[in-house]
Amino acid sequence: MLGSLAQLSASGVSALGAPGAHVLASSGGFLIEPGIGLMVWTLLVFGATMFLLSKLAFPRISDALGRRQKAIEESIDTAERTRTEADALLHEYRERLKEARAQAEEIVQRARQTADSHEHESKERGQEIVAEATKRVERDIEAATKRALDDIRKEVADLTIMATEKVTRKTLDEADQKRLVEEALNELDFSGLSSGAANN
Image (cartoon, rainbow, N blue to C red):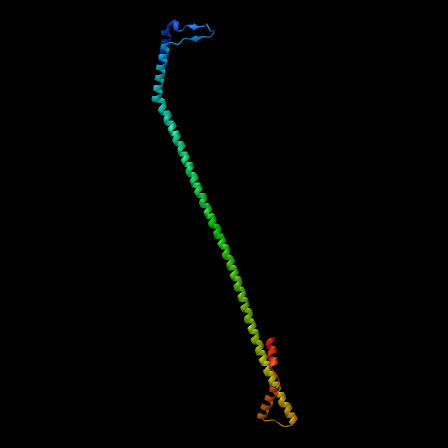
């Protein structure tokens, strides 16, 4: 094809003849005077070239540009989807982090409440143990005091009977012994002993 174009150009130049190829040197420059035939052939060659390009090259270039545009659009869509997914994951992560913090605070609060409850229960239990021990000690003291008073009464009764028998120089019967013991015990104040023991 290029050979035929070169032949057409050569025939066009020869068709112009010597007058068309005359060189003007009046202004000191070399100018070629254009001819109509050369312009026609140039337009024909240009038109043929454009026709061939439109049939062979332009569709391929258009397809390549379309594929490239499609690939770029898909890349943009993929990047947009990735950004959206990343935003969603970030939001989900923040929500989970917020929930984890709330759960941690709730666990700490429950632990504090449990510790306070155990401390309160321990104090109450300690107070109950102290109260029970105090009551037990008071009962023991009261029982010991009662036993001591009974022993004192018995000693007073025995001493009263012995003293009376020595003074009167006679043995007293049971009724006299009972009467003397009651009189001696009524004269003694045992309430002070019992209240003092209870206060201790």
